[in-house]
View 1 (tube, rainbow, N blue to C red):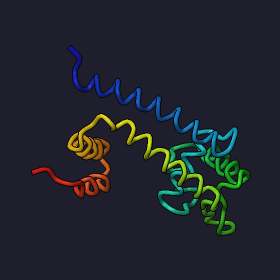
View 2: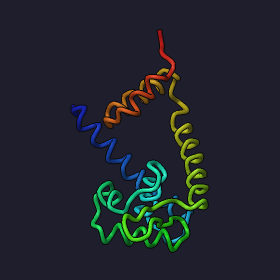
View 3: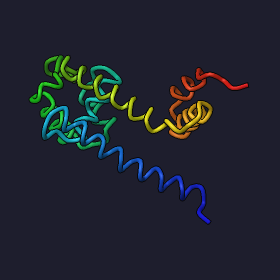
View 4: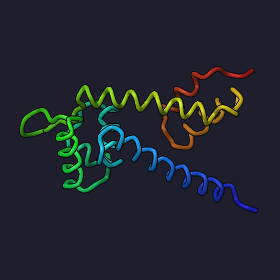
Length: 151
């Protein structure tokens, strides 16, 4: 009999593989030849607003040279812009990038709804609460508490 942690590990590993493939497809649609790590940079900047390159390096846990290369590539593609002169240099999104990320978010919501189609409302609510708790994101746990409560 499988242990629950083994089943979770297998499911999460599969989810990670599917997630990486999805990010790669979205990145390619946004700008041909762009990799998924560049998309991760865009998603981070979209979530937190303009970031210093040093903050991106820390958040992504990538070497500084690789992070700068990703940002350079995004600037060349017209998806990111550097502001602030010499130091600290901020990395922000262009309007084009914002629009593409909004389109991707709409598609992602649709894909999630499709995946949850066979779930009852109660199962969806429980899944949202447990997933937020599992990934230890207090902000998501608090927001999941706003979901309709069952008696």
